[in-house]
Length: 185
Ligand code: FNR
Image 1: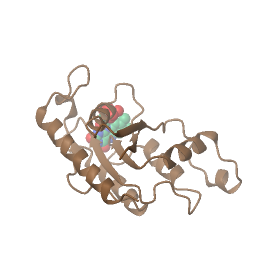
Image 2: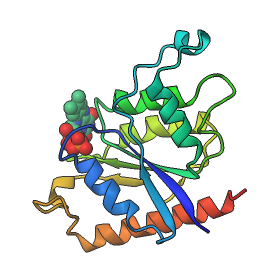
Image 3: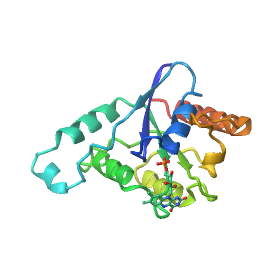
Image 4: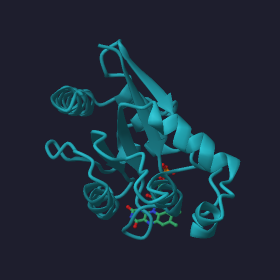
């Protein structure tokens, strides 16, 4: 059955390695899975007053509406100072409110963390996992996707050249599809 998968990327950088890996990974999903790139870079910082005073910024409303139509989410994140980049944490916060109207609740998710360094964004991956667990999202547990030394895996067009990495990413998407089907309404 057709599914819509939201792709949320924690880097706003042109030429982002995280985006390159995320898009090529999402392309490994079955052909009836529609991948939707969800913009998060334009979201004003979360301020509860905007919800309490019914003055919701148009970007928040657009994001919340778009996310309601998404069946599951791929989170792809770099690591900033051993944690999640602020832009991605802000999107989690905006989507989680107003209280009781979270757009994350029960949506299956997978986390990919990407880094030119050796630890593969472990800190960001697990900080994100902590928030998603609290937000009641079923998350792929295994395989854990830490893409380390990413510059060695990409060519100058940012294409993944390593066959082993592609095979691993395909297995992560297969597991993600299984999880989505298990939680089908
Ligand atoms: C980084 N970088 C980084 N890398 C890492 O492995 N662990 C870390 O804690 C950090 N911290 C960090 C903080 C800040 C503010 C920046 C800008 C960068 C390096 C980071 O992995 C590198 O810039 C990546 O290229 C960022 O991902 P994209 O933009 O290529 O997707």
